[in-house]
Image 1: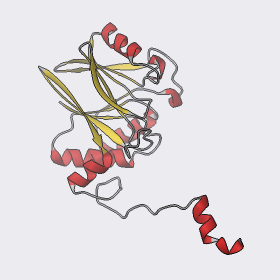
Image 2: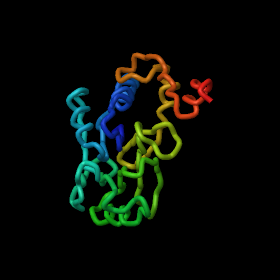
Image 3: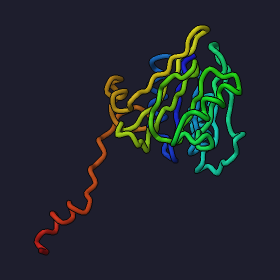
Length: 199
């Protein structure tokens, strides 16, 4: 299987849809996993793309239940999908690790931190795709790809800018058709320079 993993889109699915279209040109995407914030983005993507999506709710979706998770069956075993806020992933991934063990999963897929992670601990894969729209790691936006087979699990973190450049698609639109670069917005300093004759 090839699985596109997203999280923390926060109401903007343009990049996510663009990435999906490019991936579909390169080969089949079997499933999309959305780790919450906002789960409605996953619903909108499913309607727009006609894609199969597994999603969970996050903290900004109003979920504060430890039972808000999903289990995805793959050739390599089950994947635990959760947002991560109830497992306190901001501070440690230990609770997440134990939850994956408790549900006999080979991997825990999560979000919440807006920072990409691909690691393994005690035979459990811990995978966070980061955020395409509101990254907190200086990456410019990331998403994840998971490849599974009977004997393997491989997680790959993809930086949006690198992915677009390598695909040759360019632009920042939702359909992969290109487009102009976003206009630089000025801030306080720019305003001072533009109106320096006032001083």
